[in-house]
Length: 96
Image (cartoon, rainbow, N blue to C red; front, top):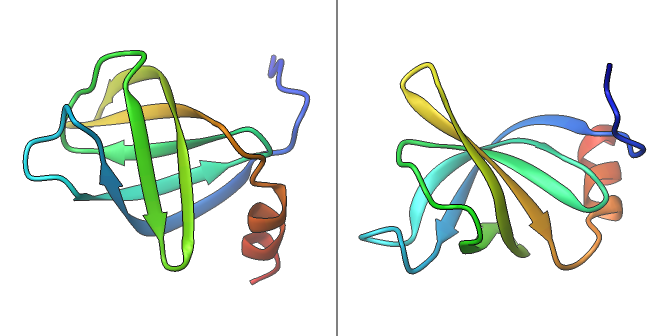
Protein backbone atom coordinates (compact mmCIF):
# COMPACT_ATOMS: atom_id res chain seq x y z
CA UNK A 1 0.00 0.00 0.00
CA UNK A 2 1.31 3.46 -0.91
CA UNK A 3 1.36 5.72 2.15
CA UNK A 4 2.16 8.85 0.18
CA UNK A 5 -0.32 11.68 0.45
CA UNK A 6 0.95 13.54 -2.63
CA UNK A 7 0.86 12.49 -6.23
CA UNK A 8 4.18 11.51 -7.81
CA UNK A 9 4.88 12.39 -11.43
CA UNK A 10 6.91 9.83 -13.38
CA UNK A 11 9.63 11.31 -15.59
CA UNK A 12 12.63 10.16 -17.59
CA UNK A 13 14.77 13.28 -17.75
CA UNK A 14 18.52 13.81 -17.73
CA UNK A 15 19.70 16.09 -14.92
CA UNK A 16 23.02 17.21 -13.42
CA UNK A 17 23.72 16.29 -9.81
CA UNK A 18 26.23 18.11 -7.62
CA UNK A 19 27.34 17.23 -4.10
CA UNK A 20 30.56 17.03 -2.12
CA UNK A 21 30.46 13.21 -2.00
CA UNK A 22 30.45 12.81 -5.81
CA UNK A 23 33.92 13.01 -7.34
CA UNK A 24 33.86 14.93 -10.60
CA UNK A 25 30.61 16.71 -9.73
CA UNK A 26 28.39 17.53 -11.45
CA UNK A 27 27.46 14.11 -12.80
CA UNK A 28 24.61 13.08 -15.06
CA UNK A 29 21.63 11.25 -13.57
CA UNK A 30 18.06 10.35 -14.48
CA UNK A 31 15.16 12.08 -12.77
CA UNK A 32 12.76 9.16 -12.25
CA UNK A 33 9.88 10.97 -10.54
CA UNK A 34 9.00 14.03 -8.52
CA UNK A 35 6.32 15.22 -6.14
CA UNK A 36 5.51 18.26 -4.06
CA UNK A 37 8.30 17.67 -1.55
CA UNK A 38 10.65 15.17 -3.12
CA UNK A 39 12.16 13.47 -6.11
CA UNK A 40 13.86 10.22 -7.08
CA UNK A 41 17.06 10.01 -9.08
CA UNK A 42 18.92 7.15 -10.71
CA UNK A 43 22.69 7.43 -10.25
CA UNK A 44 25.62 5.16 -11.03
CA UNK A 45 27.12 5.75 -7.57
CA UNK A 46 25.94 5.24 -4.01
CA UNK A 47 25.61 8.20 -1.65
CA UNK A 48 25.14 8.25 2.14
CA UNK A 49 21.86 9.30 3.76
CA UNK A 50 21.87 12.91 4.87
CA UNK A 51 23.97 14.07 1.91
CA UNK A 52 23.03 17.53 0.63
CA UNK A 53 22.39 17.35 -3.11
CA UNK A 54 21.79 19.91 -5.84
CA UNK A 55 19.90 18.87 -8.98
CA UNK A 56 19.93 21.07 -12.08
CA UNK A 57 17.40 20.49 -14.85
CA UNK A 58 17.53 23.26 -17.44
CA UNK A 59 16.64 26.49 -15.65
CA UNK A 60 15.23 24.63 -12.62
CA UNK A 61 17.33 23.83 -9.54
CA UNK A 62 16.29 21.55 -6.71
CA UNK A 63 18.24 21.23 -3.49
CA UNK A 64 17.59 18.69 -0.83
CA UNK A 65 18.66 16.03 1.62
CA UNK A 66 19.20 12.44 0.55
CA UNK A 67 16.71 10.28 2.44
CA UNK A 68 17.56 6.86 0.97
CA UNK A 69 19.86 5.15 -1.51
CA UNK A 70 18.89 1.70 -2.82
CA UNK A 71 20.68 -0.50 -5.35
CA UNK A 72 18.63 -1.25 -8.46
CA UNK A 73 19.74 -3.03 -11.65
CA UNK A 74 23.39 -1.97 -11.38
CA UNK A 75 22.55 1.64 -10.48
CA UNK A 76 21.26 3.37 -7.36
CA UNK A 77 17.87 4.97 -6.77
CA UNK A 78 18.10 7.89 -4.38
CA UNK A 79 15.26 9.79 -2.80
CA UNK A 80 15.59 13.46 -1.99
CA UNK A 81 13.50 15.54 0.35
CA UNK A 82 13.62 18.90 -1.37
CA UNK A 83 13.77 22.20 0.44
CA UNK A 84 11.32 23.94 -1.87
CA UNK A 85 8.01 22.48 -3.08
CA UNK A 86 8.22 21.33 -6.68
CA UNK A 87 4.51 21.04 -7.42
CA UNK A 88 4.44 23.60 -10.22
CA UNK A 89 7.40 21.96 -11.96
CA UNK A 90 5.81 18.53 -11.56
CA UNK A 91 2.52 19.81 -12.95
CA UNK A 92 4.26 21.35 -15.98
CA UNK A 93 6.17 18.13 -16.59
CA UNK A 94 2.98 16.05 -16.40
CA UNK A 95 1.29 18.30 -18.96
CA UNK A 96 4.06 17.77 -21.57
